[in-house]
Length: 115
Length: 112
Image (cartoon, rainbow over all chains, first blue to last red):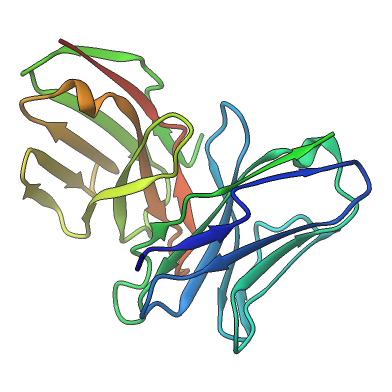
């Protein structure tokens, strides 16, 4: 499967626990984006990363949320001390390098439920 | 004013008809425009992108862009029940790469 991969597909956490969401970009893509979609809401940009660099984190909440895209391995979105309001679908997208780098392809998403 | 605005619908069309979906955006610096289809419970699927004023056709889909009016549309010809989904309009934030702003989507229902 050459598409964007995300795991886990479903994640249940209790309030106060940590959630780690993983994303492997499409083969040949070096740009990764994370979005959040709340029920009945639109997709909201969170962060844009390249290998070992955060390019734009203007959509990330200031506390508890962090993201990385290491030299080796998948991109990780980490949510510390989760609260019920973090329950949402988290989508990762990837894009190729070059002039059309904003043409993004989405993974299947991780549905986070906070109890 | 919302950054990317779409009529939430639902838009209902009979099978075989043309479905017309519209989107307006507020950032005059935006250069890239996208249409995604999202089935319930699934992830967004890229179906069209357009960068220049005018029309762009791909199979049954035509995207139309008018930067002067800050308006982008998607036409679906010969609509099929399988086209029933929510259609998301996305626009890049002017001056930045990668940061796409999404509308809330228009729910399309194609009746057999």
